[in-house]
Picture 1: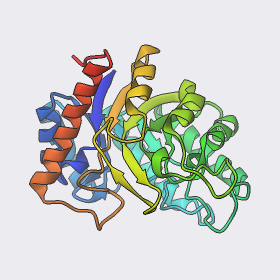
Picture 2: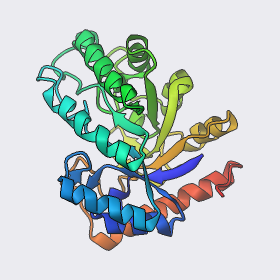
Picture 3: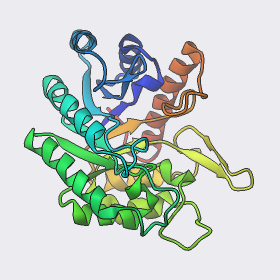
Length: 293
């Protein structure tokens, strides 16, 4: 096991991201954005600077938190943007020695039912993306987010059946506020434990997020790890008891939500929340009998 996190939630710039990582005593960052731009979209000059600072600090990028095939991409639109992002990501990952890249399965078509989501085109595109990364010696991991596979565990298993060898990054928090479209309407929210239990043999990476959903208000609130309904303790203990030895990545969403520009926080609060989140997860590991050393 190793610990890492979306350090862009602690600081916008790479210097602050490195500082937060080092303050926690960790050596890895899951790279998503640097100064507001995804790491596969920053300029070559900016990327060179990032590489130099990481090398000087002895910090590694264990995963690219890419925008490839994510919730901002429609399956009804051309495939070009995700292909171009993959093409830009591959040489950068190879330069950094990064092996994992987070991908998704395109946004859910809101005006269609769960069985009318252009599944075959999604499968075709993901097979092509997976082949690109595997041919480069890299591993794509699919996240249960606001995408086809995130509609419920049966849809993730359907992806795996149709994209042979696809690995997963399981996010503990996303099920809390996601409709379970495998069940009859009105869709209930998903159970993180139920979702994890059905897909865990395919999980190669874990995201730690936690939240509480207020059904009356129809809103969710992010919490520190273990304080919400994401079954964080149960899932992490089960994984580690079963010999899981991969990465566990913090994605707090407490001060800053990457995909929601309305949610912002002063730099010092953003930084302290990220570090505190990491510290609380370290305490959680102690409590479940898997101290991090």
